[in-house]
Length: 399
Image: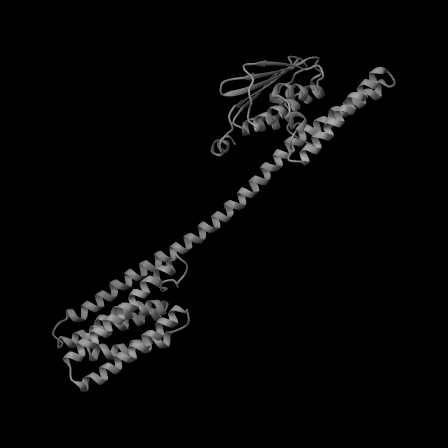
């Protein structure tokens, strides 16, 4: 069994051994001095020379082993020299038996594996022999006591060392898991940002270019009729607006042309970029809404109007903005060809991102999104968003 981990930073097992080790070393010094004084008071000068010499040698060896252990350097030879000197001392003067506790812990600190058990066991047997000699060989408890205490200390020490090592292992696993979680969060953030940018590009650049292409193709077919010139003029205006939107994407994905107007007016401008005949209805008392809600409403109107222009063949489109006490609603209706929402094609290089992008915008803000349509029945795109900004906790739940 490995000894206690080496001294480390605050809160680590090494720090705990540092405080325990200091107490063990201090206890050894106090007990050694007390035992020496007690021995000097009870024995003749002739006996004192040998015992005090052994005590001084044990003290020096103890210090050497403790220093080597703190520095993480090998000290097996020094430790077994200490055990040998200590065995002679405790057998010659059982008064020093109390210091055996410190030697036991030092042995487990300085050595590992079998060597640690051998050194600790030798200390226990030497202490038992010294105490048994002190009883003149008449008290078996003097033998069994040190051995039993040594066994108990071994079991306790092994358990503490196991728990300390387990804590180190768990700490390493937690650190690794935290690093993995941070990497996952970074990847998720990157994916979310890519989705956000893809929605912005789809709702502005892609839709505008597609509508401009339709206008130019229609003008080409009608050229040189007056209607062709009107189509060219409208396509030019749409391309200019699209260029402004592209510049806005480069600069924080803002929409200066729309964000400076009241929300109803901005929604109507956004719809008429693609459906010049679109009209607006407002219900409830108009008021300011959070910037993120306003931005989502604008993009939903742009995307829905572009889809109407490209796919519906509608003659009329109506945008309805409703102010409720705790929410704001948006409906975009057209009288076009309609479609089956359940049979809509999945997103691909040819398109199909509009409805998914609209739904993601609304639901990420804690709102509700729905599409009602059918072949030949026109289409209604509806959204309801909270009128107050979401907290980070609620936003995470909405995702």
